[in-house]
Structure formats: C-alpha cells, structure tokens
Image (cartoon, rainbow, N blue to C red):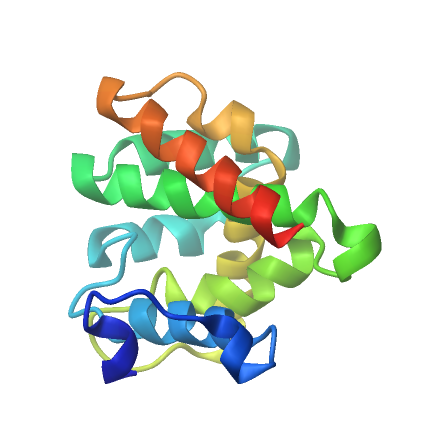
Length: 161
C-alpha cells in the first residue's frame, strides 16, 4: 500500500489485475481514522430502514448534505465514479447493489466496536441509493470548485471503459 501513497504515478498495467485499484481504494477508505461518511452519520444510516421506501433517496440526500464540506466533496467524487461504473454493469457485472456491498462498509462504521451482520443491510441500502440515485442525492449541492473534479472522474472513466 505504501507504494501507492507515495504521490507518484502508478502503472496498473504492470499488475495485470483489474481488481488492484479497487483493493487500494477500499484499503485507503478503511484505514481512515474516521469514516468518510463520519461517525455521526452511522446511526442515521442504521435508521434508514425505518423510512418509507419512497422517501429514502430524500433522506439519504439530507444525510449526505449534513457532511462537512470536504467529506461531501470526496463522497460526491467517489459516488459519481461508482455511479458511472454501475452504468456499465451489463459488461462489468458491477450493479449499484454489488458496488454497495463492496464499498458500503468502507464508507461508514461505528465509533466503537465492529459492524454487526444486522448493520450491513442498512449500510448497503444507503450506499446503493447513493450510487443508483446519484443525480437526485447530489444534484443540489455543487461547490463551484467541484465541477472540475467531476470532469476528472469522467476522464478516468473514459480511460477505463
């Protein structure tokens, strides 16, 4: 992992495994001292199952909009990328649901203890909604400096697919 944190470009072609970048990203997220979605959001995510299905995207939007600005920007960047990956699920088999299972537990966790099996369902549903309803959840809060970041995500996506 340290090689990838050195700030130097990495040629992933040398590894001949398309999963390496995802493993690095998940490891980076997991090793943060506080989850990207913050400890404060964990209980709100757990309560998502108490919200009527038709209102869940709105609730997810409220939760995400309550994040500190820097967290919001990084989450939007990441979820935008995952949304674009999910749009190619016919080819890559990574639907919003599959991506949520892979990345959700790396975005939010409790301050104390580990995630129980019962806690996985709301985390996965929350993450799936963020990915599947990206435009609804993230559409209204666009910091001006962020638009170039989203174009970078689009460029990365174009290179990969």
